[in-house]
Length: 150
Length: 192
Image 1 (cartoon, rainbow over the protein chains, first blue to last red):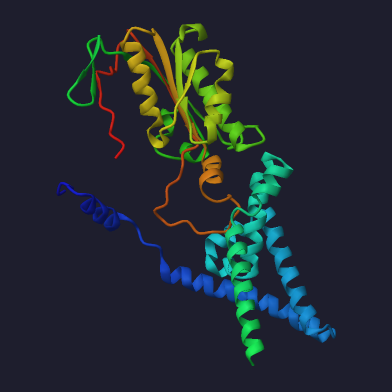
Image 2 (cartoon, each protein chain N blue to C red):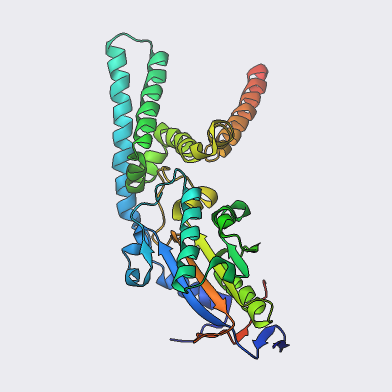
């Protein structure tokens, strides 16, 4: 083996030795699991429609049921196995968001209900909420201004 | 006795020796190729405790007790203890070694904690202040994931080359006289 002199050489050596993630396999799994979750959502939505429930309320019902399933599977230690297999497929739908709040709540339960569960529940989802809500407010303001112009 | 040579190296004229070592590890380590060298392998990451942190405290406490009994010493033969871990305020070693009743130096060097402790213990022994000193360190995969990365139940993917923090603890007694191995010189690295 050639001696490694610089940090760059070492970096190249590490990159050469590091196994790559199986991107094609991961994409395929993410695609079908993500699609399957969305299909479940659609199924619930259609069921609501058949039973004559208002469209907007149906959408809320879909979210609630998917969030519940995800939170429940998280507590059973099943969701992290699905997540490991499907990656973005289970992370991007609302199921991933529910998991990102339930999992810290479980993990920090040992530190008490106030400072542990209460304080640490949003450690993973917090940035998503802060920037998601902030951006939605900014877009709302822009929309309002353009609305007045029209 | 002990002197500085060159820019940053510490040299011992009468090198201290590592009298005895002990280690206790978790289930994943027990499945590895080094399993036969460990003093104890646990099959439960909680080890009967109700949090990762308490489990890690118990692991380091039992490791230190093991090393003392393996060396056939009593607790009051140990003059100083240098120990650290990865958690905030070094709670595993701090709480775990509370019952040891030995003057305690809490140290933090992340991966280098053990060698840092070994160096300091050797300096204490080599300079003649102490007859026997202990160095110890511990980590817990679940505790480290909780503190530095994501909750275990989070459904994310780990890269194939991601690291896995050891669940376990190692400890050594550094003594003034013994059969070796000896600590002859220490060269601390500059943190650059």
